[in-house]
Amino acid sequence: MSKNVTITHPTGILKGSIQLPASKSEANRALIIAALSGEEAEIHNLSEANDTQLLQKLLKSADETIDAEDAGTVMRFLTAYYAITGQKKTLTGTERMCQRPIKVLVEALRELGASIDYLKEDGYPPLKLNGFTSNGNGKLKVRSDISSQYISALLMIGPLLPTGLELELDGKISSRPYIEMTLALMQQFGVTADFTENIIRVPAQKYKPVVFSVESDWSAASYWYSMVALAREADITLLGLKEGSLQGDNAIVEIMSRLGVYTEFVPNGIRLIKEHQEKKVAFDFSDCPDLAQTIVALCAGLGVTLEMTGLESLRIKETDRIQALQIEVLSMNTSLEEITPGVFRMEPGILTSKELTFRTYQDHRMAMAFAPLALLQPVTIQEPEVVRKSYPSFWKDLEKAGFDLIFDA
Image 1: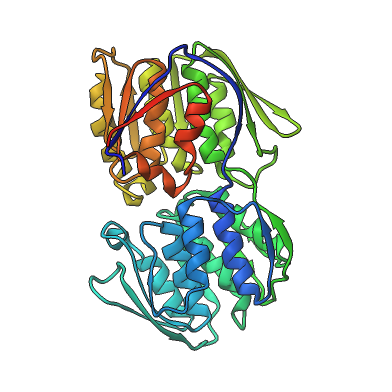
Image 2: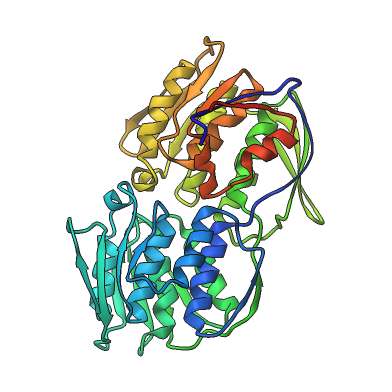
């Protein structure tokens, strides 16, 4: 493993086509739904991301102890999956994973009839799943302001409950598009549901095995948008994306229209073209929190004043992403401050160092968010292997686009 990668771009001109990785958000949901169908579904273009490869392996594992590593969707989706299928498992993960809360999901599953124990600290993994006995309850009220993954995990098992599931979402809904993606994927596998105001109803029914192809990843596309905005000249085509995507991170199209990138939908993907950018922007990331790091790094590089809301869920991701961003932008002579509760502001600074070094905090998105700044000046990224979580070919794709990369031993 390399400790660092130093990145430069000799021309600042980006041209060509990039085949993006498949969406791990779609892939991981499709894998769980296919497993719940009880029959062999045909899923094409599965993500090479470690999270997806790990979930695929664990779903086939007969081991009693299951290690979800650092994968949030794997931990949360498998908790619900093992519960509804009555499997007796011990579910654990990395040290950071065991610091990420899961109480909302566990309490909901217990209300439905699951027997789940905490093996260490209440509210956190590792968990001991001891089986499931339906108590006839199919109505739940759950907090919806922390992580949509809890809600998606419950929704996917909803059709298997004897009375189906009625889920009342309490509070501001975080990452609503991810909930809608889950429901849309369930529908593709033959399950109907109704989402009206803050109530989701999933009648008892059976999934059908289908042929399903996973779309390319809009989250991965965001880093290429950032590169186009930072480049001197750019004309990049990203393959495998489509208009009307189920993925919430397609919000990057609208966000980047204000930061200097025009999106043209073409038959096999999207074409990105550099254009004029605004100097002061404000965005609400409630529906697309995974884009926040990309936009913070980009605005710091462009010298754009940025105001952000909707970042609540970033505290419980792979790292405390808000704190990590606040630390790392200091090297760019700027600061990210919470000016009122929930509202963050970053004023542009002037880059003074000849080379920038960024820590990644074992977070794949920190590495990929700051790497595009190499179009401005040399950038060193620590722990570059973290990209394997969602975009294993990221560094190779940068080289295809003309970046020079030097990996330390």
